[in-house]
Amino acid sequence: MLDPVFILAPPRSFTSLVCACVGQHPELLGLPELNLFQADKMEDFWSGREPDGQLRSPFWAVMRHGMLRTVAQFYSGEQTIQSVNMAERWIKTRRDRTSGEVYRELAEHVAPLRIVEKSPGYLRSRVNLDRLIATFPNARFIHLLRHPRGQCESLMSAKGGPALLFMLGSVDRSGEEPVLDPQILWHDANAQILDFLEDLPAERSIQVRGEAFLNDMDATLARICDWLGIRGDAPAIEAMKHPEDSPFSQVGPINARLGNDINFLNAPALRPGGVTVPSLDGPLDWRPDGASFHPRVAEMAREFGYE
Image 1 (spheres, helix red, strand yellow):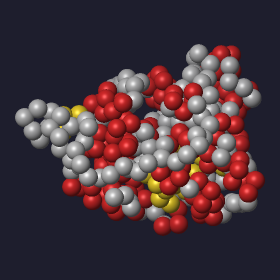
Image 2: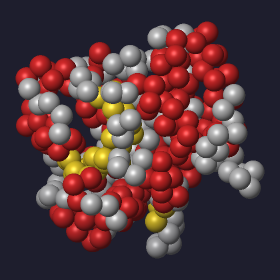
Image 3: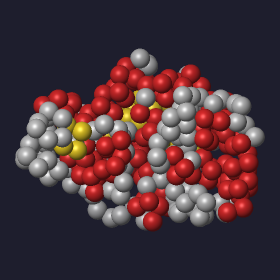
Image 4: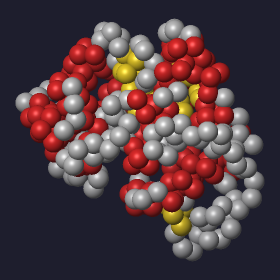
């Protein structure tokens, strides 16, 4: 069994697009967000509750969509209302197993293809990442980056974005009035990724700036292939430039519609032209006080190669 490739990044960091692109390589298979490692037991995964009974997330019913679509596709070859109902039964019959055991079952089912997955929810707790590495000790990791201004603006404008920020505690309480500030999440999520990857051999991870991925795709994809030790010929690179060909790059049936960002699902094909890299300088649009990036955020971004 080949160990998966996990993309680690906070939400709104081009994760849906990059995962779908990389996963179209002939030796890989990109999946939607499984969120499996947010729970230890499958019973807890399905219920959406922590061991103490607390609800894991108010969005948990939607966060199961990726797993339902994956099981439906793997074992029925399609994603329909009926196959998703089958997938629900498949999951419930494994309620006494660990999430790691079920993830290994999925990986074995599609071998020799190698799974590529991204679930930003894994970054909510170091425990989730520890479960991941305990299940797949030789997994590889793409640390996907996005400029903090672009990522924060995208998150603030996304449907449910502000609610997610509030739920995750991304609130600046240093002033007289609390301010919702997505740069807190950007910093803390990336800091947790760096801390996690520091304990692994250097060759097990790679940093990829999302803007560079979109602006120089051929070179970036070739770099990823070389790092993974997989073929990087022209046909393989061309396949990776067609994320729309994935069976998961579209809205699913009514009982499991998502599993990825809805904007990506509605328009998964690559768009012509690159993306502009914003500046670290200047006031932030979401700050009513006109503040700029916190010095720690600016310093981290510069270490990642942003200006």
